[in-house]
Length: 352
Image (cartoon, rainbow, N blue to C red; front, side, top):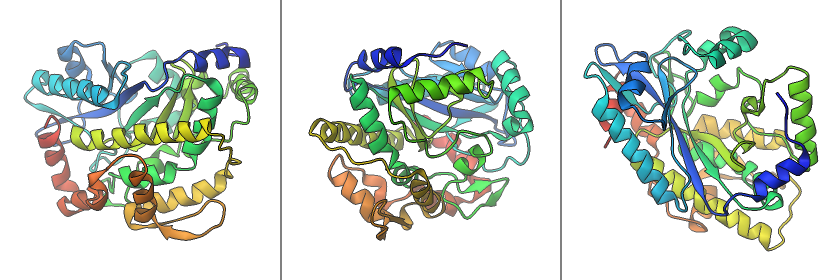
């Protein structure tokens, strides 16, 4: 597959409408008698909506909203899609928003699609362990250079966002001791986690051309970092957030991310140009975030000063938008339920 050159990338990322937002949400279909995964094809067919699509695992579907001028409208569309799915779902089935299925141990069936077959051929059995779900936020900035500036600023805050959204303490029926095991499972695949520094659009074009020409990837959709320039939509796609059980929690996260993106764009417009932090330093913070969530500590990327994650998030939230769940971490509620009671609860609150 051909890739875009630097001029085409600049044109794409400068052609978007500044301030627009769109969402993607990955969901799991389960059987009510066992709470284990079930094929999603029937649920997708019953919904009969092009916004509701098959994902790579056979039991996983995705909602993709349209483009909106504010996050509230994007969340309202997401809520409507969830309600449609719940209303048309077979009574023996349920749909849940779980970043990792808390009971699954071992490989899962893949969707019967050409893409799934191609990825299985490339990544072998690793793909069958990728039963992970996130909510992805697409942000548009209307200018290529501004987009790249926000990319580097937002890249440094991925650990804080991971801590805030952490919602996957269980895997294979056991407590992993982490606030989110989802990124650990995802990292079995390449090109995961903290994305690289992109010094220019020329560098990104060269890197993607190298990867496609050499057969490392088929196209840019396999550039699976937790933040990436989306080469079809011209957006920054934030992929670090665990999917949330309820739309209300998703709404709070999306509003925060949107406000944070606007703040970072304003700072770039005002001339702020900090050198991008080394990837390994952000990765160190990322590990702390996955382990301890908002209860942990993160290091200043330049001074090394250790500070509570909660305080770092309070600073960001106070400067952007309120987030009432910071002092009520979802992972604490999930742990109180335990792995066996989590899935019925997720099914109950799905369309609330």
